Image (cartoon, rainbow, N blue to C red; front, side, top):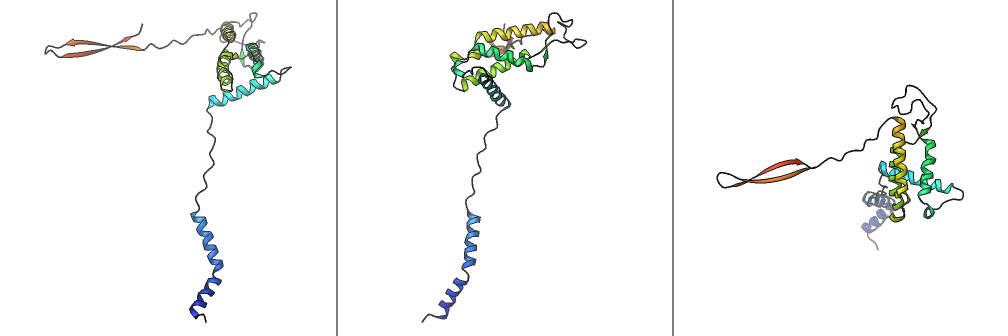
Amino acid sequence: MMSSEKIREVGEGSSSSGGATNTIASFLNNHHPPTPAPTSTPQLSRYESQKRRDWNTFGQYLKNQRPPISLPQCNYNHVLDFLRYLDQFGKTKVHLHGCLFFGQPEPPGPCTCPLRQAWGSLDALIGRLRAAYEENGGLQETNPFASGAIRVYLREVRDSQAKARGIPYKKKKKKKRPNLQIKASNNNDGATSANFQLQSAT
């Protein structure tokens, strides 16, 4: 015959089963290993974001041609056409030869001369596209953005805009690094000391 203590223990265990379940659930909730936070994609720099937008714009331009042009078919002529196409969205006033304000950096009034893409903007654009081309599987040897024809075109745009706007292009001079020269001299006590002299590189 089961003792009263055993009956009481079984009865208490049966009656407290719901409480035990809640206790276990609470324990699991409190001691469950934390769920790792989802890894966030690193934010692109301003340069990388602009490079991606430029690359997508150029790709869309090739697709819109009739017939569409694939990337392996792209050559420097397509790049030149793309640069000329962008002129319609330019914001830089470039005076024509017949304009009264040709060569004036600060014209006194409005004129009907066209707006163009500034040379500096085109130069930076080509630099980004040249990098994006190789990052997207293109070969350096066949990179159309690195063609000599592109460099010639950019130089012509630079010179023509400088004359039309009366703003001469000034090439940035590289800073000369000073040369450090050491001269040894003997002191009266026979010890040798070093004299340091800074001289500009010639």
